[in-house]
Image (cartoon, rainbow, N blue to C red; front, side, top):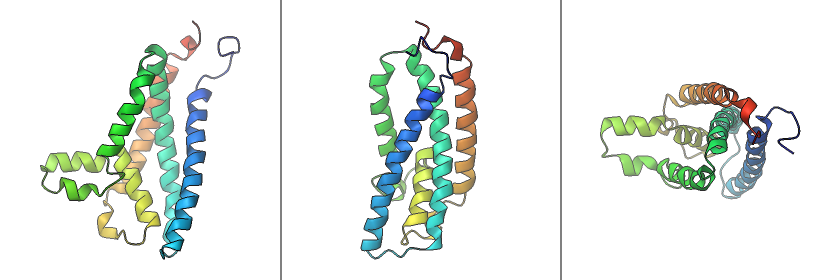
Amino acid sequence: MVRALHFPRAVLPLAAVLGRLQQLLLSLGVLAVILVASGVPVTARWLLAVPALALQTAFNCGLALALARLGARTTDFSQLLPFLLRTWGYVSGIFYDLSRISSGAPHLVLRLLDANPVYVYVSLVRYALIDSVTRGQLPPHGWPLALIWATVATAAGYAFFWSSEEEYGRG
């Protein structure tokens, strides 16, 4: 069907991103119930999760477009991708406080870890939803970095994907 119909091929990776966003929103709904049940107060700061998730979705769209092009060329790439993304998540401090482990690391390593897009977006959502996360724990460059990552990933992913769009699904 992909070969028979003419349509913008970017719809395929973008649909995958929107499907994952829908799953994330359902998970965040469950998290909100757990947080409220745990005594975390609902504050206006929770509204900061909306722009953080919007920026993360833009970043994810750009990344999905770039990875879709790579996956279209290399069939084994789809087997390697879940391992790479899982490893990236573990390195980003999703399941633990990254600052505890990296406290003795060299300055350059600390700056690279702070600039990691996964860490940036996770930090912004944690700051928005969890009352115990104080302003001092949110990197001051969090919002600008989130905007930069979203803009760069979206523009670069779009350009990279569309530079070969006419070849997708052609054999």
